[in-house]
Image (spheres, rainbow, N blue to C red):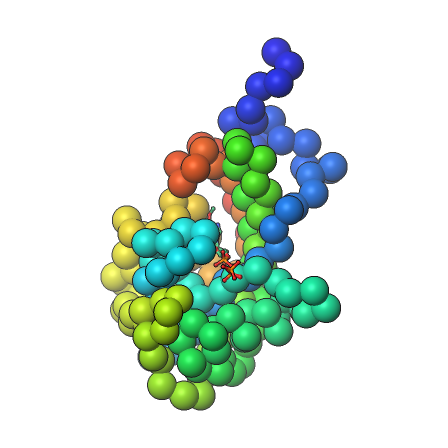
Length: 167
Ligand SMILES: COc1nc(N)nc2c1ncn2[C@H]1C[C@H](O)[C@@H](COP(=O)(O)OP(=O)(O)OP(=O)(O)O)O1
C-alpha cells in the first residue's frame, strides 16, 4: 500500500532517512544515582528525561549536551563521554537523531529553571513509567557503559516498535 505511515522499524528506509531534528541527552551518574529532569517545555514536556535539547548550528553534540544542561539545571557536567545514539521516526514526519552522553560529575548546584526541575533517582528506582517508552530499553546499556544504538518508531508519544544494538 502506498502512503502508509511507517509502523515498524523495518518499514523505515534508514539508508535515506534524514533527521529534521538533531538533539542530545546527558545523564550525570554519580554515587549510584542519576540526575534527571522534569521537563517543563519543548518536546516531551511533562515527562522525566535527561537534560538536553537541539544542537545549535556550528555546535558539536557534546557542546550542545553541556550547554543544555547548564541552561536547564545551572550545572556544568564534567567527565562527559558519548554513550549511545538514538533514531526516532514519528508517523507525523518528525525525525529525531539524538546522541546520548554520560557524565561522571558536575560543577554547581542543580537548580530549577524555566525549563526543568532537577530530580535525583537511585539507579534501581529510575521512573521509567514517567519517561519516554524507549528509555527502558537502552538505559541498562548506559548504566553498564556498553555503547548502544536504538532505532524506534513512534506515534505521538506511543512507542510502536524498536530495535536495539549494543556493543
Ligand atoms: C522519542 O523518544 C525520546 N526519548 C527520549 N529519551 N528523549 C527524547 C525522545 N524524543 C526527544 N527526546 C529528547 C531529545 C532532546 O533532549 C529533547 C528535545 O529537544 P527540546 O525540544 O527540548 O529542545 P530545546 O532546544 O531545549 O528546545 P527549544 O527548541 O524550545 O529551544 O527531547
